[in-house]
Length: 421
Image (cartoon, rainbow, N blue to C red):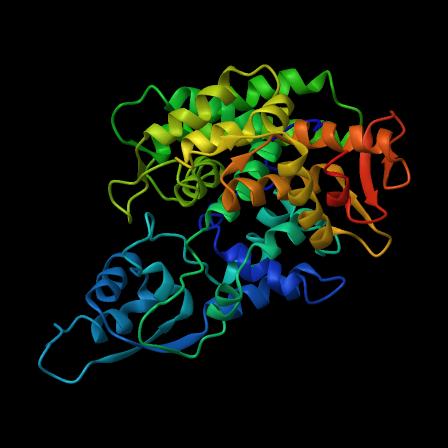
């Protein structure tokens, strides 16, 4: 169980989840990484200049989004009206700008700049995709990378563009499910309380208005978490949260800058949920948001549940099926669960054959709900493996932690052959 489900390093630049695809891909290419190398590779890759045929949507994006002085010449070059009867105009822009300008995106903000190299990678750490210190893939990161298509991987290396066939900033249903689970697992204490404040809002709200709720939320979580603190690091995290609450309150009434403690803390709790399909934006360039039916369908059960662990393990797939209109059928029989677990296990198993039980059940659940239209919960998948282990001990082996909780599983063969057992 998490000591405190709160993002450790929230930052304004953590807006577009699509950057995680390139970051995790780069991290996977080495057994260990360092922040400077990984972060700078991310920025260098997405800010690479490429040629593209100028379109009205790209013109509009440059005019609205690229307002800094360094883009003055680019804005001037691209401001001329397009003449359909003349030869098509070619522009040189950053790779990320081509994808962010896509009119199908709900939000077209989130461009990374040079100084973000040291900040954005912490999103992958906070979501449990990368290991702190070595910046190597954790099993959750391995799961995520397995859901990134070959076309999406190649999209970050393209040299020429006529049309954007695959936009890596668009998330597939599989990617949404995995990242949404990770957000709730790692930041659920904040998100459940924040969205309980946002759900009753019938009109669009700004990031500043949402951010004003954070001091009260942070102080409540700090008070509740202090009794569970077990180390000096736990106490430091609590104190950091209290200090942030004070800084956010100090910004009340001050001119909007986009760089204050309020915006740094609230943006990763809003913008990613636009990518995840749980918030809408009336204007893709403005930091204004609107609660949708999907927002309510997903967050109402989360707010009401007594335990986030229970929500994640016993109702996550039911709720997401409803929120994303997947219309999946609930099936918890072996014929559905075991093939999905076997498929996930092959993807995730370590050289010694072990996989964290949570990770194999999560990926299996994602496979089942998206590929066959049937869902089961993580607790049901775990119970199925337990029952199978009792019946055929030589086929399924578990590892437990010092408290006797099952942590890892290893299969000595294809478990689908036991479906008739």
